[in-house]
Length: 422
Image (cartoon, rainbow, N blue to C red; front, side):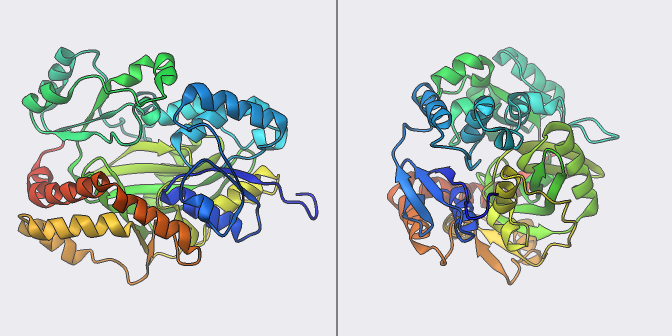
């Protein structure tokens, strides 16, 4: 980094935890942040400038606009906060300066991470096969898979590039439910161009169900430099999620597990050469399965930052050529991150719904650590946090779906946890 000059980072604005955490991490270190679009981030105390831009979801308009901004030098670095942003940045990788290009994963790597059928063929952990995954071309093929594996199974999008992030998938308990739900997804408005490039992404995939995924999905998260390797990495687990079985984390607990860490980093090293990452893994008896790899910042990144692994800052330093060996430090373990609003709605609904004894026992055994931080913003930068919560309150669908998730989780946990993994 040239003395006295710190390059700016473009942040494409929204109301979500990843963007707000990225802004706090870099902003408090004096990195100029240029926010584009609408969202809560532009109200951050760390916002240096604010600009308009086409909607990120509008592939046909946004990608040419972004290409022109990179070529003109208006944008030199982009915060990797969503799947679409990571994908666009990788598609335009050759248009960045050499020092930044080396920190952007090639498109083939991004596709292997974001397209789950490709990921499933590459993510096996040494000594065991990957989790059973199928992508039938029609309903008859899906029913044949369900009959062969047995129910329940997980039905989910092959990628969020085409269907958007609102469609998370579902647990399918029998053939009747599979008949009902196995059909092409609606293409998210504006992403028709991506659907034309990847038509197979309109159909869901079927994956073996592992009961432990309802209560514990491990994450190996960190950041990797193309030359120096992994700069920092840690382990945590998703204790609660929305929706149940297939959702994003609403309560993430820090932990320390060398076996999970080593296995996870083997998969990351195989698929991704650089950048921030979060790999999800589930356990089934003595087996360990990798189920998802996000080649970008993730919703509970504030937890990693609080544990001492400031991933956005390490990523930024990598973009200016300042790298260091792997920080094999012992991270702070007695810590948790929580999406407070959705967590509250789920638990409020759960108390009103039927609750089985096993779930009550599980919750008593796994109370949150005393030190718990918020995923969605912080009081050190209060306006974005407050605006993001108001956004959720202004869109009651978000809260009603969270409440429904809590009722399903409370009423169905016993049934799901008793289902055999095949």
